[in-house]
Length: 129
Image (cartoon, rainbow, N blue to C red):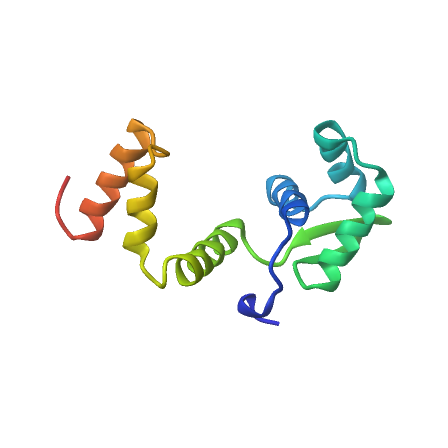
């Protein structure tokens, strides 16, 4: 299954994936400890989410020294790119400019972020900063 064929993540599935990306290979217990602090979820809920993410192709499982470990099949960066591309295509009719203008016009970009964005634009256009 290619990255483009993976189903869209729900908010809670994305939260689980974020924990897995942060930890790398991890057990269900590792994920539960973090999510239990954030949300108060049960071990069974976390295990069910991990199994469903594995079934959908987002995670893979391996056994090391008798421990079941989960790891992401797709990188966080690749997933972010897919999500942004989907947002641009569906909400902004394919216009990346529309997304950027919306972010800038609604004050959701800090001064530091704006400076980094300017630097990236300069680099992308082949100019020296």
